[in-house]
Image (cartoon, rainbow, N blue to C red):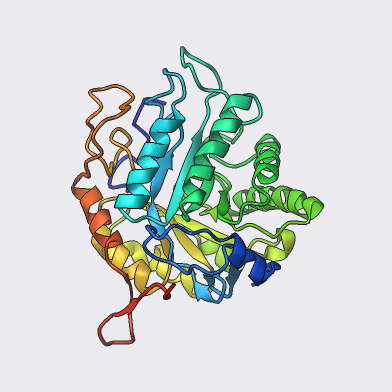
Length: 366
């Protein structure tokens, strides 16, 4: 994979990167929650998330998660040829959370099958230092009160069509054990399933969910939210899940993730109709009709993540001030697309109120 370039399939506006189950003590959750006041939106009492009906909840409130995709120390391959720099990743997290006001981040984990002159490339199970770096990056974000969707974004153990395998599930067992007690971590199985049959993708996703739930059952911990990706067209299509929801672990605490690099005319089919019956999240979206998308997902109370907080992994939220390097210390200036997201995050979440004007979903008083 070339640095900063990824084919997100046909119809993309740019090259994007690759009710139950809520069994926690509310008082303990409230004591554990040290949410930073800089996080702009979302409930603040009790950190564990759960699904109910067609929504994702924190406590009794629908979770209003919004933010962006965010890269690990390999940084969309731009930094794979340099030693890992967790401090740089954390600097960017500070910008996205503290200044842009994101409360939800998709942390894209990236490994390669061979070194090819890379300094950092091995996967979670093969590189203990990478494991430690992942833990450090996640902790930095969650200590700020934001949520992390931990995703195996570029993972050599997946199939050529980006389906998880038994080897992938071994990685998920490790990650599920690492973060079993962390309420602000969600799991995203893979990135972009494509060119396979619906039932094959469903079975692979169901097996991954079962692997994670096995770890949680053995540990006696709450069920984390697991995102399964759309079965077709680089994770765009959720239709099969509407009639065939995930069954592993009783189907509890599953959200259904779509990636939207399409015009507004496709929004109804891609997320609004599935979200009538399923808890849906937008795991990636591009600059095409982005303002319309953000308005419509907020109206439907669907959490969303833009692609991507980077300058060399288009469509980019940041201007490429790296000079063709890894970009350590570069000025973090929003692109036009990035400014759209930043402006939206500065506003309270807006929920459509029938046919009348939008009402604002304000954070609860502290």
